[in-house]
Length: 291
Image (tube, rainbow, N blue to C red; front, side, top):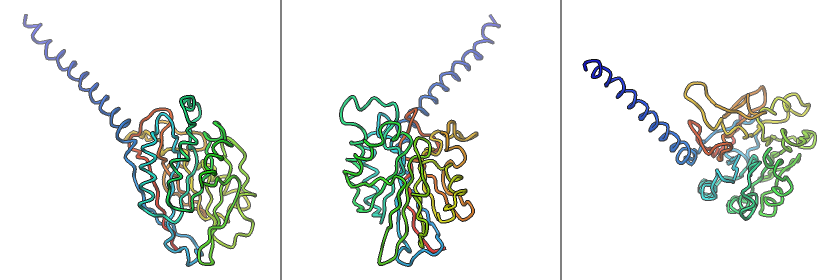
């Protein structure tokens, strides 16, 4: 009998440990799936640009990325993000790709997510808003995504550049076709003699290496990207569990690469699994300042 009683605490401790581990795992899953992926973080970030025209001192640019309106990104969350941007009243809104998700079957159930996403984004109060495509947009249907956005007042820059003008001054806003799934052309996207600052939108951040090697690369002051989701699920030790191709070197945040500044937005949606951990969705607010 004595042996029986000596064994009981050991079995009881193992049971408690297993139950406790299961409860902790369930709690972590609930938190990362239902709570953390909706905890939008507004990141205020100053960008110092050489020869910035006086008219753009203090100019404010909002960036969001990787909406992935689909089974994992609910319309109400995108509506919340639009409301937040409107409250911040930026001068320019930039959306750096992946409005929809490759492989989704949600479009069978009703209106295609590209149209629903564009409809929600059309409520942005800022009159200046531009977008580029991401690899998922190209894989789903690039013309459909472009049409959905452009018909609702959000032009999509595909290997193009346009002047953003204020009080007689300007900077150039450029956008490339998706580098992973289509055909980017920096000769078309970047003006050959800009005589003003140049901001480039490119969905995949690792494409910055191609920009740096291009003859017109020295003309780019700032490149804005998304694609990585910041890793989406980041462990306290080891960091991101999964990173996509062309998003494995520059994962999130700010980088200075010679003359060029790169910022990688963590995005607001998720892919693969509806989880975020140690990697909240991001709305970035840039304020331009002279260097």
